[in-house]
Image (cartoon, rainbow, N blue to C red; front, side):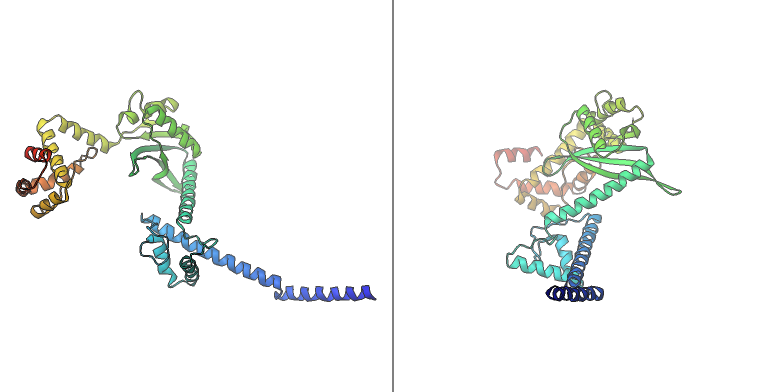
Length: 345
């Protein structure tokens, strides 16, 4: 009788649990529903964050600010847009409220996806996705050409850019595409070393260099040198990878070489640069310049010939005003070297 009692009791519990499961009213079902709702909310939240990052990235706008706190005017474009959208979006509104309260109480949330680290991870994921799509298009097209150039950034690191040109095939439509593909920190300057690095990066991206039909660089000896330049080394690896020099850089070099063959031009551009250096080295001198000349002076660019036009324009248009400003500088308490430089100008 005792065994039968427990059996009946178990059957009743089982039937009750079964009916609750069918009606979706059991504790397990409620927990599953709550979990599904939570998962859906996090999915929608991350979707909004990714859309904001894509919006800022497409327009070349900075994401970070000097602060990472909600409702701080210096927290950057990313958090600023989130604050704005949270006024109209209930999902963002609730999330921003939780993050703001935790920051005020100095309590760390387990995860909120608004930190600079999370933003960097989102950017890296988006960049990786775009890079993968470009590589897939290149592999479908088969043949391509490469454009490689390097320049130091503000932290004095040599940033080497890899750009790929290829024909995109979309059904019956064809278009020539030029895509930025990769950034590389590489400071070595020898042609053989740079060529080896290019081959390494292409291998890393799963791109077959044997299918490369062209290479384009500036006219520097390290890149376009006939015997030891990058193009010469890569031609040994792939004879079909023909060099196409940068036309703009060639024209720029022609202008520079022509100017350097004329003593008067060398002297003229030297004085323009000397004036800029002299006025810009002191706030007081620059203030005197602004009192007499309605335009700013510019330095002479060593690499871009067209930039010299902007440096020459204010000198040519306001020559007498510049002379007046220079004469006024003679009344200042200048050092001996500054007086000598002023006199030479």
